[in-house]
Length: 88
Image 1 (cartoon, rainbow, N blue to C red):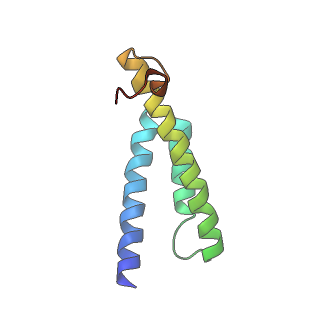
Image 2: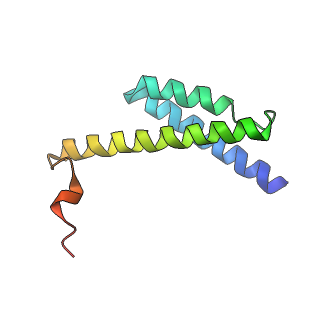
């Protein structure tokens, strides 16, 4: 039980930090992260929390792709790194 609480607290702290950081560059995502984060607290039924975690996961994946695409553009590299091959 204590491990679950610790894990939830760490997740919540990480999401809070992430939402603040994201809000600087993409305010619309920062707001969505913060809103969904509030709906993952342990006071919400597990089925609803599962749905919120799933929504957060999808949002985080989309956000990750957005940041990776921006990094590629800033480096001046082609947008699709896989089209270049891995060189292996």
